[in-house]
Image 1 (cartoon, rainbow, N blue to C red):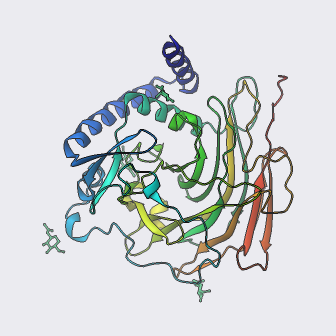
Image 2 (cartoon, rainbow, N blue to C red; image 1 turned 120 degrees about the horizontal axis):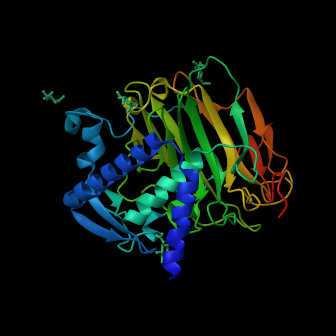
Length: 395
Ligand SMILES: *[C@@H]1O[C@H](CO)[C@@H](O)[C@H](O)[C@H]1NC(C)=O
Ligand SMILES: *[C@@H]1O[C@H](CO)[C@@H](O)[C@H](O)[C@H]1NC(C)=O
Ligand SMILES: *[C@@H]1O[C@H](CO)[C@@H](O)[C@H](O)[C@H]1NC(C)=O
Ligand SMILES: *[C@@H]1O[C@H](CO)[C@@H](O)[C@H](O)[C@H]1NC(C)=O
């Protein structure tokens, strides 16, 4: 009975967030069929099955057998397709050590897939449905939170409009676990944009996507053709044997100790692909082939850092970052993006300059502290809020 209710609620939510156009629904169904075909195909490719301490099942498949390779016509990839960036961004790096992420705590076997293989989550139909709903929600970028319009809110710092082509950006973001309910989400991320295309990467608490309230790694890819989280559309190709997208990020910051995680997006100008580098040692864990994009395949025109939340119209908006009502201008209390950097046209990682801040409602604050003089923090951004915005509705 409880399950029926959940399904009914999900179904109703799905209906309320999908647009009324027949075209969209057809695309949904086709996507869905395509994903089901993929699932079948993946099952055939599975060489080994591994489990996580959270009860999820993953299949290990050979990296080069990932179905997206064929889709993107990356022929002859066994020889010449770079699944790691061909060069690394240059410049001075992090002084302070951020969270030493240990994926072995995630896997029951303590190590993930064998060398040369990548873990692919064995998704259920429910996972696919929830991922689709999560995408619909994420794409509904309405500012006002009114009775009939859900609300997405931001507190970010971004580069100003210039002619610079960014080869990427990076930051270390503090890890929190803001309390969200229902279809709400609360994220902290770095984002690169160009024209209709964007890539977001960071952590999110998103029960619609993950069916739990853990803080998890996520990517969101948007192009003129499609948009999705993680690998739910043919965008990012995962390349890590032990760090899948969606992995929980622990530990969570407290007043006693703050933990953060480094995220880097790097555009490899020699092939046009975007690489996701994760953690202190900037491990490549996935890449987006150039031909996924129309504009971003030629580099980024903007880089953004900060928080984003969503709430449906029937509940007050959720906390962002550490969830305090007002910024204390102190990284012990406030969520932060430290060492916000861009990667310049000669592939140097440099401190972000010419930035501006943006938050759409006063419940979420952001401070661009600029260069702080502290080597650990350098160009620092503080963001967050308790939420509780109800729009023009009384609760
Ligand atoms: C594939 O790449 C290898 C090495 O670059 C090359 O020797 C071979 O001729 C290529 N094969 C095809 C079919 O293009
Ligand atoms: C969500 O997780 C719970 C266990 O916490 C499980 O019983 C339920 O079936 C899951 N729901 C969906 C929609 O996957
Ligand atoms: C977008 O769709 C068009 C037509 O459906 C297709 O030709 C193009 O290759 C697609 N672009 C990407 C980046 O997938
Ligand atoms: C990139 O940064 C490096 C190091 O600061 C600098 O030497 C180089 O001139 C910069 N390149 C561009 C294109 O701005």
